Length: 170
Image (spheres, rainbow, N blue to C red):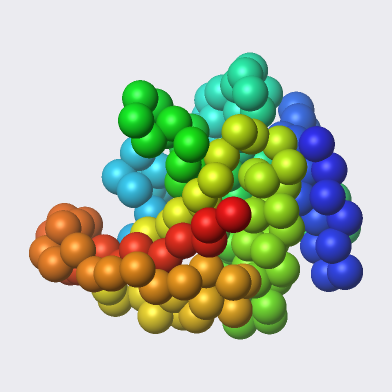
């Protein structure tokens, strides 16, 4: 998969991405806004493991965000099951040097289009930690609508915070 955007691209991970992935993922500020399964520190070995996971996924659901073919972040989907099977969870992260440039908004828009074109879903949703208003703004600018606050639903980095739910519905 490859989506070329004006300032970046979203593409399938591939061997050779390990060093740039680890370089941008190994940041406490990035880790703090992601699930605990995203390791910190983030090593090249972690990148090797993740790239193999992403490559082997059927259907493919984890992608590299790149600038000049260098991995600067990731975007992907968690396919839901059972009665939620027509929903898909979207997530993304960018390396800190690329924050505040509008790249995440561009990626989020493109990924919603990709989700609706690729998967049999009628809803794309994302959650944001209460302490991360920048990600909430990214989702809003990308067309996601705020649906609600799940109070005290997240425990991360020794703190309890709210989770904010956003969605785009076809």
